[in-house]
Length: 217
Image (tube, rainbow, N blue to C red; front, side, top):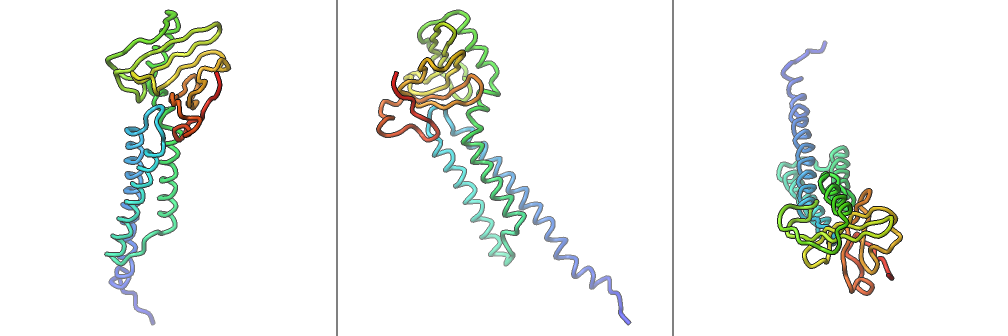
């Protein structure tokens, strides 16, 4: 004859009851770390600059978080790295890197709808050369910056650049076979938008990470 003991049931249930909130906290913490890494990417990525450092910051953040989790797990003598949590951790880490490499720059001009209107206005008024803008921003490019416009038949290029003309965004309309980025490092972002870096040493030293050198022109 067996005796049912509520106290015994509660004794075996408690570890699972304690484990569930811990798992929820661990998942929530991982998501928060991913958001923090994404925010750091938004603050550190600049048009025309190498993407190595922003991506390295992502790796450092996730590595630090993983080390802290292992330390806490060791101090509490609990098992770290359950399959579900491990996959979530690695998946969000990969997502953060993808956001840094593929997402930040396109999103920066995609969210800034005024940028395209400014470019279209420059083309419409047939602007020529460069002018300095002392206030405001275009995507992740903060003032002061220059707007340089070139219009040819059936095509135009409006560049939003740093004052030294070394890097920035470009809004290209019409054909892109006119060599807009000849002897420069460039990268297509989305739609009409490109990012570029003017590096005279690029043929020898290479372009910033994430950019491709466009030769001859």
